Length: 268
Image 1 (tube, helix red, strand yellow):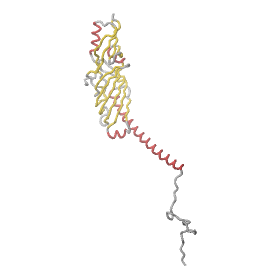
Image 2 (image 1 turned 180 degrees about the horizontal axis):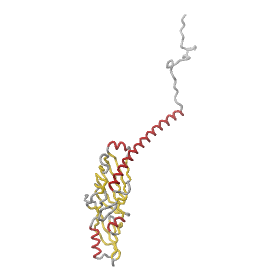
Image 3 (image 1 turned 45 degrees about the vertical axis):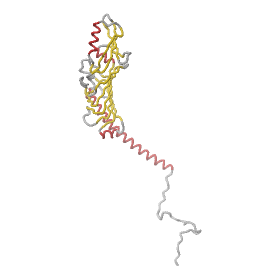
Image 4 (image 1 turned 180 degrees about the vertical axis):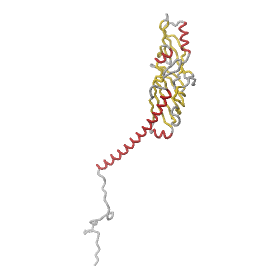
């Protein structure tokens, strides 16, 4: 006689051995808090490793661009040491791929002034280039805007003029000291400004200490009459202003295309 096998328990409730998801189902319990922490740590570690790897690769690319620019600058400007070059912004790889670096800073020391009648070395030159194009010759930099400052020490300016030069108490002026026979030490104040040809010009000099005889005035007229050209500035930079400071003179330049070789004194 056929008998059905009831799936209900003897008391009429739920089945004693019911399998909700069918025969052969596998039950997976939720990970424990400890295991969840381990998984989270592993994921974070993997992400951190990826970020660090990407950063390292990016820094290698930046280092190559910086080294290439520094080498071109040193070779072109004949500096005793390579300048410090820094490519700004991250990631640099994306900038290189686009063909334009957002901003590049160059700081060079002790740029010589060989071949000039009154050589005036540049103690320090800082150059900032915005939107620098990376294609083309490394010795020629094409940028949307270039701003540069050349620092000229008073010691170097004094040697170029043959007078002891320092900052004057009046803004925009320098003081010169000259020792004359019989008259002794005489101090004069002179204005200083940017002139054509990337030159520094002295104007409106007047005696502020001592007595200046006629021959002495003629001597100063001759010394101050001729501007000092800055021929050891990268070609393409144009002198806009000069500012006397406590330690020397800051000469401010602008430009767009800069070639890493000494500029011509005929620059405007």
